[in-house]
Image (tube, rainbow over all chains, first blue to last red; front, side, top):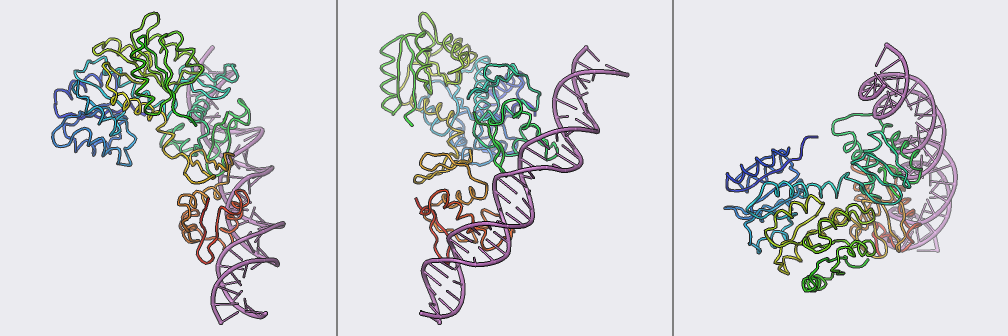
Amino acid sequence: MGNEKILLVDDEPEILEFLGYNLSKEGYDVTTTTSGRKAIEIAKTIKPDLIILDVMMPEMDGIEICQEIRETDSIKNTLIAFLSARGEDYSQVAGFDAGADDYITKPIKPRLLVSRVKAILRRKSGAEEINVNEQEGSIKIDREKYLVYKEGEELTFPKKEFELLALLISKPRKVFTRDVILERVWGGGVIVGDRTIDVHIRKLREKLGDDCIKTIKGVGYKFES
Amino acid sequence: MGNEKILLVDDEPEILEFLGYNLSKEGYDVTTTTSGRKAIEIAKTIKPDLIILDVMMPEMDGIEICQEIRETDSIKNTLIAFLSARGEDYSQVAGFDAGADDYITKPIKPRLLVSRVKAILRRKSGAEEINVNEQEGSIKIDREKYLVYKEGEELTFPKKEFELLALLISKPRKVFTRDVILERVWGGGVIVGDRTIDVHIRKLREKLGDDCIKTIKGVGYKFES
DNA sequence: TTTCTATGTTAAGCTTGTGTTAAGTCTTTT
DNA sequence: AAAAGACTTAACACAAGCTTAACATAGAAA
């Protein structure tokens, strides 16, 4: 998987360039557009991780775009941050009501912008993905150190086992289907045999105890503490 | 379950009172303290959903508190928002680096504050809220966890039974014909015998009580709470 | 009432998904 | 190059869950 993708939407090209420059420098994949209407089409195509919208734009403003994105299935969960001139408190409220995830005020300082973007993206991965150490029960993981803790004891897991456990533990009790597991742990186009997942599940159970991963036949697996 | 809990930390009692008043009015459970050091102890005790920290405080400032929270297992995933006077951009950067989830600038306008807090909390619960339990009566289902709740008790159902129940419960009191059930639960081209649906209905009745699914002879079945 | 039909009930059989083990391939380390 | 570790595959076992068959019952129609 490539870098995280950011779509910038603002009617002023200089601002696009300024923001774009600073974000690409940080390794993000940046796409820009000056047209609010096009923004939605582009978003549907490139599926960005984050969309940064200027609130004030001619034709279609950020709030309208935001609302439309929130109503478009394929991209409704994309993170959205607004840009606005300082003091436009009215639009800030409206923005959050429209479903914004964050709010950035102009004038923009590069370091601040980058910190903020990182924070926003970190939230996303926190919510729905594998992130740093996750709580729950006596089994914990620390993604940074790549360690699994079982009742305080530190264990080192091979990559696939770790990623699989991390995925399951990222949302305890949620059922993950084999499809999803394959996609998230093995990655998109990989083709592996039927038993591959089972075998890894088995190894996890061997190490963590049989009760911590439950099978829902015909559906998938879930982690339980 | 109770309301969402917010812990406010600021050295100025007037601000605590002002924020506390506005947030309790919205139905949040608010706890306040003027001591940064105490804040962490309190957080460990009450496990708030969100902690709002003033950046500038004597003794122990918001950033230090934030760092310590992020290093304390039992509360490390708590949402944290910072309060700061406008223009303290340095601390804003430092705040995000320390692991803040949001940043609120003074002076604070009540409506804005509330919008913002809602947005922060929505993020957290966002993912869980989406398809959590579908409503109705003492029997609920949670598709994500693949669980059925009967008077609070958690039950695990086999796939077909679950899907059948989910279908019926998706529109309580609506009658679903056998044709529709076959198509929605078994899928298009599948051919199964006459008694298959009955048997599954029977199993549901066995587990949930006879009264919850009603037969309309010659028509179909419906769920009633 | 009798008859007919749709559904209820039960248990047995079959199917398919998953568990399990071990061996094989690929990778990394030394 | 050898050794160790990680991942995948193959083969078989097993059982939960699904379906079926056979018979029972109830309600509607004749």
